Image (cartoon, rainbow, N blue to C red; front, side, top):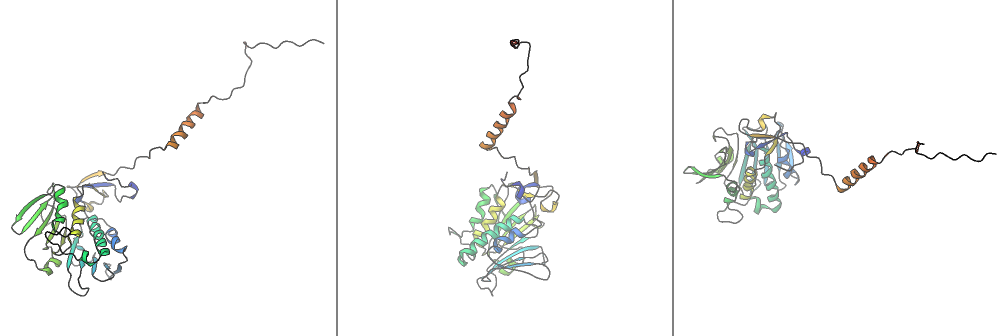
Length: 288
């Protein structure tokens, strides 16, 4: 069970496994890592939000009023005025924590420069091998499969989340605009009707992909509100109540004060001596 402070959790239940959580109502956590770098934020007349890196070579769209269900679209460019070098999409039901994992890794890569946020996956490379994106899933018991000659898949132990990798040549434009991308991560029993999905094009850096697969494979549950049934997959997800925090353990000073208080309470009340039959009577004084 996570060790989060109950007072900071946005929810009253934990959802497990976490790939059966869905998007939260607030997207700020996904935007914050890039906003913290000072990226320019602006909105269009529909209320869609856009973040642009200072050099114009990485752009994020948070598209509530987009043309499809692609809520988050992140693209990087070798030339700010050219076509995207890579693109990632999270749909409107994808767990917000996965988006945040990606943008956090992207913020770090951007700080390190173009050699990191534009690093193409390269087989055999220690830092850029595409297998880096798969390893976290394998390490948490996901199983490899080959559903098609052109697809390698790896599926969660419960069979309700899958990462697919498509081999062969792909059209870059199709990768950016459709779900027919090199990487396809989805939850559900069918990729045609997933609970949620995310895609990434061929040249998306392996380190950024790994941040997402580490997040989805993490066994820690995610907090959600039980009544917000669209924030988790009802009927499949396991819900457990978020318990209030245990009272803090007493300090040595607290123990000493409590002991002193008990001692004071045990002292007898002050009594006034009274005469009794066992007392010796006073001798009469001499008569005058």
